[in-house]
View 1: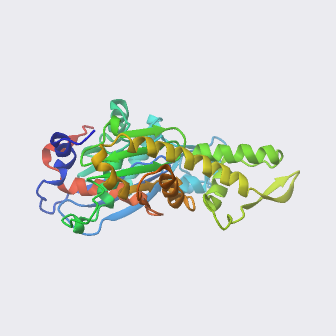
View 2: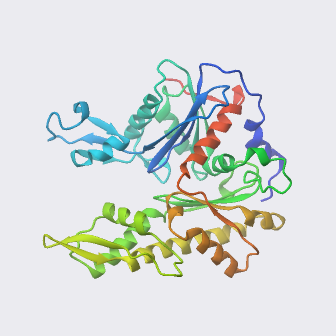
View 3: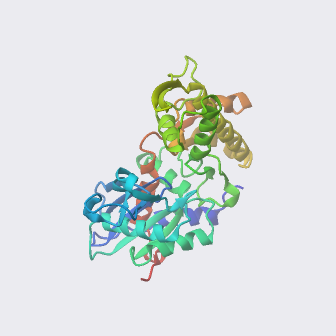
Length: 376
């Protein structure tokens, strides 16, 4: 699976074009996420720090019985944080599942909201949009349909390549000691609905370069809930509440003991504190084991002469990467398996930025013939 020159050219061509003069065209790098979307934008030809916005990927439809004056502007549809704030009076829909559109009408409404959030009426807007490496022609066509007439032109690029490009330190490309993530890295993206592990080796990843399983944050939530209900069947916890508990208390490899996960539940109308530390740990451990197995299997697909450098760029991103101790635990498992000197890096709280930034880098350097026109 060694990258040949044609593949490398396909992945790098958009980086080689001459930068255009500053114009009225707005360029956008978009990470269209299952839970949260990230936009970065700047005028074409500008090197200024881009504008950035994080928007929860959710559409809220007003319930039939909601009274006038309850929702802002008596709106029938709300988006993002406003939808989350008023969720008790809305039917919430997440347009994406596993990183691709599964509810087309809601996706179109959300895409319209993204375009309006840029607040540039009348200007041409071009966007580079990240797609899961495993997405097929149908998934890309759904995205084109959602953004048709909103963005003038688009380019779709696999998300792992964009993440590597966004994470790349451009000032060190010529440094012989720098391990360039665009040239050789392994990206682990732990989302809500799926976990994706992908080789990035100087070209756009293909199906052979990645593994994807429908086991991620949502599955961890279900494991935690099932284990809690087995011990406290009357606690009344929901998956939404479990997600909040996990985000505050998730952990693996806590040598000095995990911070106790104590939560308050209502039993028979009375508050009761329960310790769910073990249940949270069990869910997180299951995720760690799955990620380790996928990482091990994908490393075995790489050309042997690339593995030593690849192991220096094992990069973990996505919401699941924020689990306390995850990077250290994964690195330890790789060492135990016999991999020599692995280095696992966790992108941290701002992980959403890297895909959007990589997309904007491509947008800034793309040649005219690389843009796809979206007719209204």
